[in-house]
Length: 337
Image (cartoon, rainbow, N blue to C red; front, top):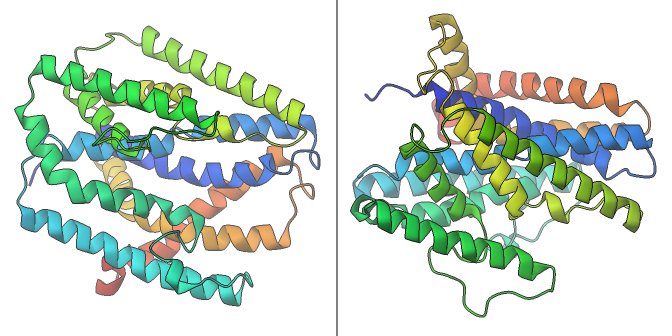
């Protein structure tokens, strides 16, 4: 068995924690006007910083899988597992939303929209997995010049797609392999960064500087738009935003190069990283239930966001981890998480 790359595992662990921070901080960001300006700014800052997590998940996929050659049977098993997970958790949330949230869902809509919003990730990953074997062959056959050309083409397409959304327009025909969303782009970016991690933007200052500038610009623009609209402005927090894409890419680059790309924690630390990362998918799937309970019982203005966002985020991580760890003790649990 190939030895784990703990640079990627560290990114995975940080990312699944950040996903929970997004959902908690978003609850407070959307309460703009009901919470203080200081609390809103704190919520927005955490929300924005944590947004690198989702691009990083796609980039991990690219880093781990695009450079491989795998059998179609293995690809089919991977897709089948995701389909099972999507179906099981759609049913779970269908029941949860109908009984607890009083928000019924029509099962006929399952192909077109998620039962629970955060399940969109599965809807994005399944099509990517469907074409992954062909992406692998393509990447295997490209030389450096072709890679650069392809990167230029898909970057231009992503920029055009995002800018056109501000004019309520989109390409008449999307660029193949990229489409009208950015998620497959992140998969390719993860592959390129990981492959050339020791050769691009050597040192820490340039990627760190780009990361800070992108985050500062996005923060300033979002805050200004929020003040102008009188409500929380979310367009610049979308994953298609080039500023967010560049910031996430720089964060990914810095972390895969941590300790000269040979991050090697102690054996005890490895056990905990393995344990948490093994449960990360399940934590992503289940944590919304606990967050729903919190949101139904505690309004954002009740307690200070300065305290509640960190406390609730950590609480959700630990509570979700405990549940997933127990569920995965069973054979069925391991199949659906």
